[in-house]
Length: 420
Image (cartoon, rainbow, N blue to C red; front, top):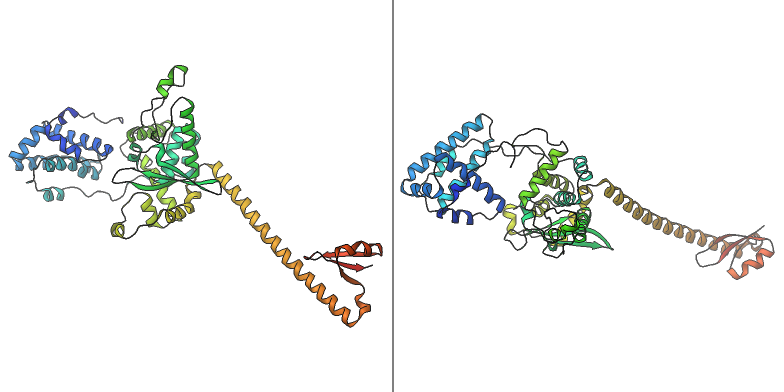
């Protein structure tokens, strides 16, 4: 739990009326947030969940009045800069959901919404720089590296880690090299969509899996992509062989602890410009430099509005567009140098092939000119033409013995000889 946050009394949530409320929330991350915010409200009214819902059904005007008072108190905190204006609207959501799921429908939510302060339409966090990500990579273990590179090159949400398995990652090869890897995000869920990661991220994930296997874990398609840590001792084989998924909350805590450890976070506050969500912004800002914005939104799992019904890019089209962004999404300096070196060799080979073709064309053209000139001279003045001859290869030795000198070999194998 972050420093300074008051623990909530979640025992207030125990009751019959909480069941449908929890069922209505699909994401485990959202569920935990809603539970904490609902508990805050119940502490304010000094009631447990069943008591509050029961009284709200009997006296909806009383419930509406309690909600208004609570939100006005939170609004006052926002004016004092104790909380963000958007937080006031967020504390309303779980209370509204609880009452709606328990058929309390006589609350004037439109009136309540009108008193809420205007929230900022953008977050204060920013995309990290490549240098910042490189610093984190060079000072962390392979697990953190795999997590960071996967998020930076795919733009997946934090909640995706609750579902990702090794079998959801599939490498894509071209000419024997991995050019990207396909990732099934939220596999088998209604929200499932396709994303890609860079070769750099895939190889780091593979290295992480190999490390786990070397300590006794049986890696399969169902192995969680990120797991808990284990002790590296002879007595820890059983612990290493029984992985527990690193939930999204654990990924978030790992990321925040790393930022504090290396001084990228220096003061205690609720909002930071460099957060785990910043990594998702890194993907978006870098990818949009070379990709179609609508494809970037698709790969991030965003709705593209009315186009959802009409825009259905095939996997090949998305991949071809994503490959344009791979250089910009590659973080490691070593990987960047290796990629540029590979491209330089390929460009050199292409250039050499072009030069060889050009030389062949020039040689053929020059040889034809010599052949035509020799033919014309032989017809006009045989004496002047006697200084040059085009002969077959088997005639070269004979002319060499007579003092002639070869000047050019033609594409058809014949040799241009010149009398000395």
